Length: 204
Ligand SMILES: C[S@@+](CC[C@H](N)C(=O)[O-])C[C@H]1O[C@@H](n2cnc3c(N)ncnc32)[C@H](O)[C@@H]1O
Image (cartoon, rainbow, N blue to C red; front, side, top):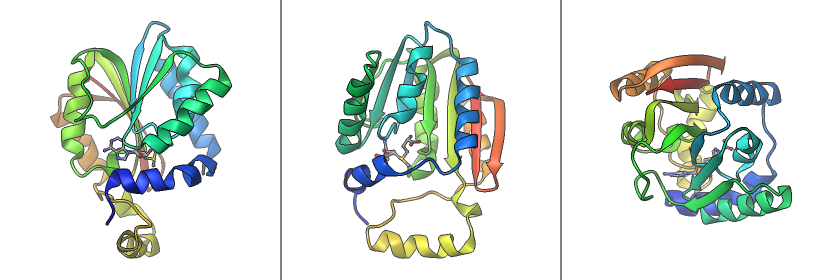
């Protein structure tokens, strides 16, 4: 299997052109997230992809640091920000482990469609907890790969072998909730738009 960065760099152009699969659920997640935001908040989004969500949220907070492992994703994101005239989103390449970020410096952290792509989600969740201010919120939206239709589950290893799918973790909704609570979070909001994904807001 290719490295994660290589895979996502190669996927960036295609990802930028892809459509949101369930627009109503996406809009609901945006609205719930914005319900938490305050105008003076500093927000971190990790695994921001081509930046679409960060750019939508930008007018509702003071600043967003949007990060991703893939420079190619970030090049597209930065161009979109320039085109939209958005000035309070900063893009930076790296992972939660590699970026030098200050503990306790964010009011909210967003991890959207990313936790299931990490080999060590527990480590990432612990780092998110560390980066948040007391009372800060972690908003996540995560695919539950083990709940996907059997055909997809059978296809994934073959696609990975051909470099057409990334590494994926197959944890359940309950394991994710347990990872969050073990890290010190309490679950503030939980919604499953369908069997194979979960949207959670967890509070430090
Ligand atoms: C499925 S896309 C989701 C992008 C965006 N959050 C969204 O919801 O559209 C996953 C993104 O995570 C990034 N990524 C994968 N592994 C990562 C890691 N360890 N740290 C940071 N970003 C990562 C990929 O480059 C890609 O942009």
